[in-house]
Amino acid sequence: MLEKWDVYSVDRKKLAKTVTSDDELLKNEYRIVIGVCVFNSSNQLLIQQRQKCKKTWPNMWDITASGSVISGETSSEAVARELREELGLDISFKDMLPQMSVGFSKGFEDYYFVEADVDINQMVLQKEEVQDVKWATLEEVKDLMHQGLFIPYHEHLIGLCFEMKTVYGSYKYEG
Image (cartoon, rainbow, N blue to C red; front, top):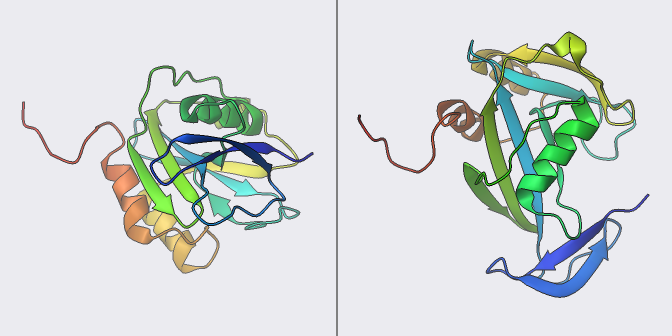
């Protein structure tokens, strides 16, 4: 089934246009995707291994969940939906801003971070998307990246996710 996506301007204003996941965006048209990192109290990131049949990054390890914002959905609604669909986790992101947003050639990627000690043995994995999950430290994620087994994010981005997991903003505030 093809997803429908809203189209945005470079200023992140929703345009009166939707496309499907098979459509190419035109010049000056963008979409929004999300990524969510669930950390536990031991400073480990919940990572998932994508299914072998996935069109992009098959069989590779990834952050907790990611995906496209579908038409009519907000970024925070997409995060909650992707976590529910892919891992069976029900976490609310209502009224939550992304901790960071990164531009890419086709749009905006919003990253959300949450700390939750979830039991991976209780997760319900979406068989079409996810084959396995596990907790990993920053060093373990970097090791998977160096082995070519993790989606090739910029290594510093993953480190920043770990560093910013419980804070907002670009500045360190004392007190």
